[in-house]
Length: 113
Length: 113
Image (cartoon, rainbow over all chains, first blue to last red; front, side, top):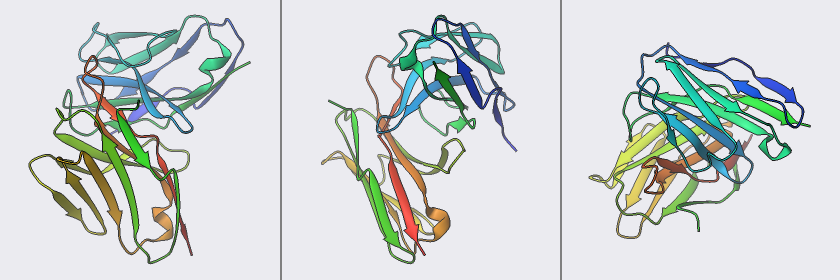
């Protein structure tokens, strides 16, 4: 059974803290993605990666960075968390680059106080 | 404006009735239009997709129709059951800079027993 695992389901952080969200997939997919989900806004793409050590900006990269040191792992980093980054964060992976099925993790709900 | 618009935002139907969710898009370059279902506490999961070389695709009780001329596509669920209650997202062509899918804002479907 294919699986995308996000390390933390719930996190509470304070403004200004550095936050790491980890994602691991076991499907040997080249492509990995980080989305942010907010009510009424759907899923918005933050960053994605087509290969190890490769990253590309999505639609809302400001305030975020990513790291892809290994094929199976894609990390989202908030260098200095702010309250407007309180959200649900979803990691996904896929076999095909631009089309084809995205496999999502269960999400990490981050609250920044 | 949004690249992919989804309506309605909420939909309630009686068990056994049909449900229809519609999406419109502005970029005519894409040829891939998926639909995702997100159950409570889980990540979105692909339920059906369609490519632009066909106008309709069915899989048991769900179907998707695509009208490329009018730039809209719809999800149809027949004989709805309580387990169909979830949030549904369409996805279509995104901003050209990212070349990735853009998701609609989501529809909360409630099937009343």
